[in-house]
Amino acid sequence: MSLFRDDGVVLRTQKLGEADRIITLLTRQHGRVRAVARGVRKTKSKFGARLEPFSHVDVQFFSRGEDLVGRHLALCTQVETITPYGSRIVDDYGRYTAATAMLETAERFTENEGEPAVQQYLLLIGALRTLAAAEHDSPLVLDAFLLRSLSVNGYSPSFDDCAKCGMPGPNRFFSVQTGGSLCPDCRVPGSVVPSPETLALLGALLSGDWRTADAAEARHAREGSGLVAAYLQWHLERGLRSLRYVDR
Figure 1 (cartoon, rainbow, N blue to C red):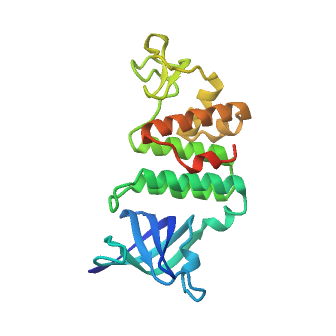
Figure 2 (figure 1 turned 180 degrees about the horizontal axis):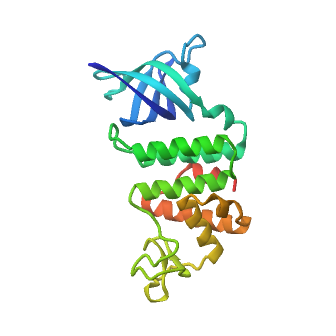
Figure 3 (figure 1 turned 30 degrees about the horizontal axis):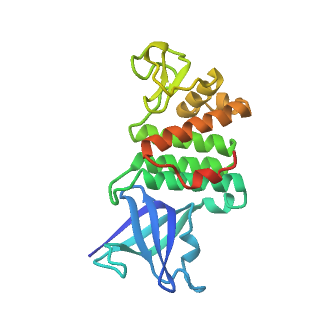
């Protein structure tokens, strides 16, 4: 039994019994952590409102043995709010649905509990901060987050050079199964031919070139979102439930 402290983002909450919740967080040092928060559903709870999705919090955990549902879960014993991103996200449908997809993506890429995932954690914090500040269109922020999450987890797509032979781009064909852009010689069945502007937009989102991304036309942004969703689904082996509700 021991105490440990970490800061993290609340990804999901689940009801437990009459007054408790299981809280899933992505933390800086311990990766994905699931913990029980006792009494947070009571009106007199001292930190119930702090443990809501999108919240960036500082949490003290008490690690112990078996809990009520038969899992080795820690207890949340103290919570302090660092940044309440949810207060600036939930009142806008576009920001809310984009942020929900971000939380689900972060959870899917950190399925091994307790395994550090610092890059994924920093990506999520940065994306929520940008989304809450309304600096860019919500779908663009989401697509940038999805592409960078794929990249830090070893699935970085190519939007310029050929993903198979490395032929310098731009290349006109694109295949989610093969890793991105393809030259005519490496083209595989099922390849699509997105517009050059769409590939330039996706490359800008991946590299952080927001000047180019913000100037993109809506039709290219929609086409790019479709490619990103298909690429993500291929590598996760199933789609995100929340992605279908995102306001494009």
